[in-house]
Length: 340
Image (cartoon, rainbow, N blue to C red; front, side, top):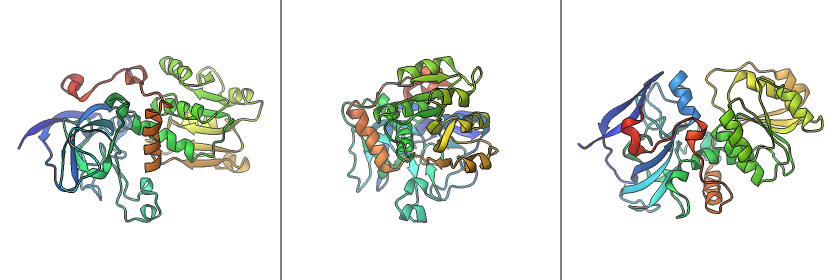
């Protein structure tokens, strides 16, 4: 059996490059050689405090438990297709939609498979991961990308789809004032989508200097440093005392959330996109008396994923963004032997 290299999660702060068997492509399956792979904030949460989403017991759909191969933001070249596969072909460039769903639970039957009761993710829950020399998964996870979308840009389709979907379900309207808590990759994606859809004021609360610069490049109109300024006070000053119409929390940090809630206007909306390592305390009365909606943005539906691909192809979203600038590193799977 041919062997390959794969980056796998073995436990908290225990990620290794392992020699594993190369997967065999069967009926209805596709084998890909990943090209570029993003390191998501979720990956960092898993490394530092996990397992969070990574299954400790066999996943109900994949049957996998850690150690699991990681990496869920990626595209690559199709190397092999199994019997009955028609959506992609050998040699084609494609991106992976990593969400795994059963198709039989109530949310799936209602058309919300991204909210599946047994949700899983390629690169977290089984079927391999993008930080491997090869990956094999059911064909429905693979989507061809247009010729003018690079393989490097394909690694950003998944996080951009998260941002696209969050804006779509947020009740956002052109001209609204928005506060984004956290200027990481998802925050930067939000800036692009919000600017594209006509946001007036886009305020970002962020600590890191390199991220502040990127936020201004990607559409932020105002930056607030929570260490030096009162986020709620600054937001109200920048919105004529009203407050933000929509707040997007991409940080998943309790203090950041509690500082941001008073920045929301009466009958405004707070959208949680972050994955939390620990359950936060929640000021229910503050939300109730101001009739503030608190909404969870669960990943993205297929429409948001396809709309993101099209927006990249049309040039409406920028298709170059270096993780080296955001996190301090970048890599392709060809670099995997020296990354760690």
